[in-house]
Image 1: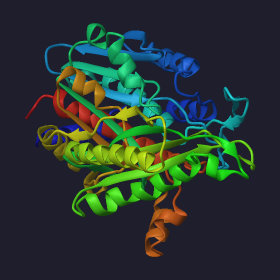
Image 2: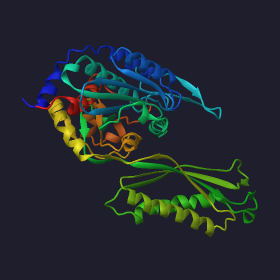
Image 3: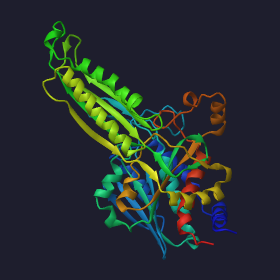
Image 4: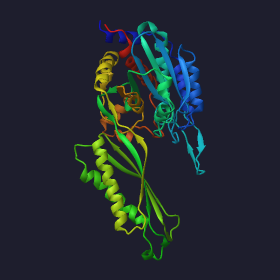
Length: 422
């Protein structure tokens, strides 16, 4: 019997009551909180952690918190889950669907929901805490359960780091994390190397000259300039990036003007950019700046454009040794449901934590779509049309297989490092 088999048998027969997970998950799903506002969610997490034998450290970089499970000599493994919601109105129809509505700073209102599965991430990590706390006979070392706020605005991990995370927890030898995505419910998807894209938001402010709409010759029209830039930006990926590389440059917003008969003085573009390579990123960013400044000059702008970067997300680049350590355990625990991942073009701030500690990390995905629904969509070649994705109002994990897979994957990943080797 291998160590992997022993872990698989433990997880099949761990003997820990996890029936509370469904009630907690449904509560979190029905009561989402936006990034930086997750006070009540953090309170519920702390309440559950208080049931275990662990040290709880709260209010790290906002509402971040950790549970530190010490169990003798051995490595230190950190597992991270995020817990903020999104400004998305839920349309799933679930009996525990969120009906929460909040008012934005500008006076508009929006629904709030866990449209990215962070409630699943949190509840499953708490399930792993329950198993590892009850079965201390099966492992030795230190397990850190880190619950991170504000992932959706790419701020939570960095906030926790800047708040002195390294002084509040033991230094991890490896960091682990997972994310739910569309895919057959219960599939656990791993891969080494770049697995989630690096990303940035780029805000471009263009300065023209206002004039009455009947006198365009007196203006420098920033709306026209912005439109030219939008078209030229598409040529960067199409004509300057190799077909063998990956890059995305999307214009999320173009705003200018307030009335139909006035040419405005300013226009603003907000871009979303994603990459798997820092070299490609640097090339594209140089091209974006070249295009913006050249088009402004060509339009005769009297003031240079302002280009600002924000919402930076580092590349999630899985360590090969961490993959080789965890993947055999997943194969043993999940069998045919342990599958190869493909790079995901979404972005995460998870890697800021292991980067800060200078330790290796592994981040994987778990499918949460009902299998019959997934198979039907694949058979029709209409996955994009028929399967709700992350950040959509009808995104809702298939509870039982998804929660089981996420809970066991989190536990198995930790045990890959902390369980005694055969």
